[in-house]
Length: 396
Image (cartoon, rainbow, N blue to C red):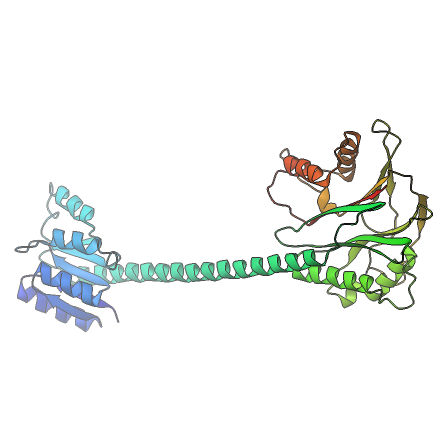
């Protein structure tokens, strides 16, 4: 039930208005002066106030100003009862009333049907305002909840990224040396890489990228890492890259892993023969840089047309073999390393990225941090939309 406060120093008016509005189903409260009316309003918070303009001590105009400056009463619909503004030339008083915050005027002597209509209209506006305030509060709560959920999700993604980082291998030093960069995106993708000696002569090297973003993609990449690191794929020759990819494809079909697939570049280096056997499943090509001097750098892309892991159960994979010259450098990377949007809107291609690697090699500044610095300089965004993984293997 709507509450209506009537403020008037004429007891007859108070009685008539109270009875009339009570008969309409409203709950009314009466005050015989402005100060009393303000005090009652602060206690009861009425939906609508009807106040006489011409009262002793505190007139209706001042009552209206003080009511409207109170944040808890600012939306209360305020009707001024007045003989002012009814005759030609008295519009200035109506303007004063509007400036004070009055929402409506009813002239004396009061025509009750008009008053009832204006009260109904005022209460509709008050209810609309209340509904809007309620919706605003609901939206603020929802927004707060969304912000909280976002913070929780970001914390979970950061924790997952730290976990993935903790699993990555330490750098190798010696005749085969490694350097790596792993920068997870805000959403966290499914990049992962590893290298380890299968025996004292053979080094396994791989980098994979699971489709999609989020914890699910990261968990699948970690699962693959654990399977390969523990060599737990049954009846698989881990010295033969094509056999490893075939076993991974059989074990990680999309239908069994939330429709997620992954690309992978996998190689095995024989340091006695200086030979690399590799196979790729839909992954960006490995890049081998070699040459007798910085001015004579040659580039060889190590790729294949094999399908990503998880698409077709009967997919086949092939091996490729090449000799590794002394001083060669192998780069393996995910597409997050080169699919970078520049300020002009141009998206880097893999060839653009390879050109950067080559230029750094020619200038004897092939440190990965310098490569990363150039990528950040060329990027239009301070953050990466995808995981950035870049692995460098130097054959001394």
